[in-house]
Length: 246
Image (tube, rainbow, N blue to C red; front, side):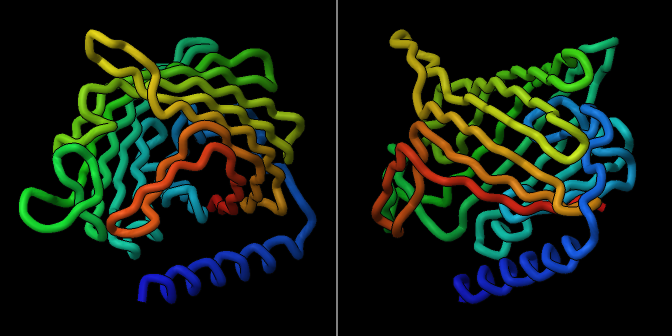
C-alpha cells in the first residue's frame, strides 16, 4: 500500500517535470533572497513550493511561511513546520523555525531502539531553531543556526542535544546554484561532543521557470529504519531532488 502510493506520487512529479522542462530554462532565482532552503528567508505571500524531498511550503505573509510534507504524511510520518522571518537589517536576516515530526509506522523504546510491545511508543520530535543569514555581495549567502529539540518518547539521539547547522549558497547565475551544508547535534552533558554529523554538497539547475532539479552527495551519519526492528547508518549516499515553485 505504502509502496504503491509512493510510486504514484513519484511518477506524477516526474511527469510534471517533463512537461515543465519542454519550455526554455528561465530565471529561477532572480535574487539571492529567493533562496529559502536552509536560510532565514521566507517565501513571498501566496507563493508555493513543493518537491520530492522538499516539503510543501506556503508563504502566508512575506515574513511567515508554513510547511508540511505530503509524501511523509502518506507514509505515516507527518511533518509540519513554521518559519518566521523576524528581522532583516541590511545584509543580515534572522528567522525562527519551529518544526514537529512524528512516526506512526514504527515504535521505539525509551533508549531509541526499534522495538514493539509494552514500554514502546511512536517517536515524535519538536525542534526550535534560530537561523541567521548573511548576504555577501549579489551571489553568496552564509547561514548559521542552532536550537534545542524535545523528544516526546525520551529516546536517544535527540534527548539532551542541541542542533547546529552551517550552510553556504553560491548563485552562479539566475539558473544555477551550488549549496553546501554541515549539521549535527551537540550533546548537552558533561561529555560534550558532536553526534550525527552530516555534510551535503548539491548542485541545482532551473529546468524551466518554477521547476528545479538538484543532485549531489551526502557524507556523515545518515540513520534510517530498514525495518521495524533494524536501524542502519549510511556514511556516503547520493541526493537527488526535484521541486516546483508557483
